[in-house]
Amino acid sequence: MISVYEMIRDAAATYARFRKTRDEIANLPLDVALDLDLYPGDADRIARHAVYGQAA
Image (cartoon, rainbow, N blue to C red; front, side, top):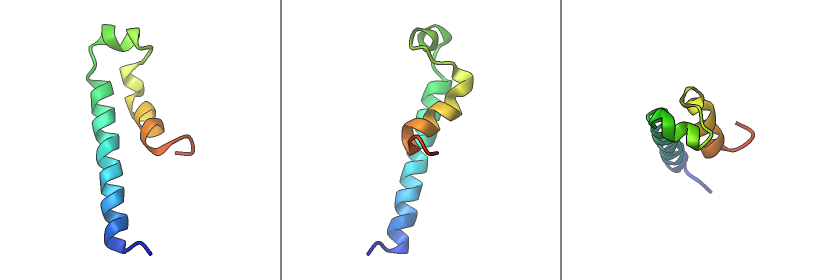
């Protein structure tokens, strides 16, 4: 059985991965982002999908 501490720790780690991913996408140089077919304005949506999956 998972403890409350473990649930909070896992949620915090997942959120940290989301923030890091979002920030990396948002801070890509525009030419690199476009080469990767990414729009930095969609960084939040892209990061959420990458970290939390399809249902998020």
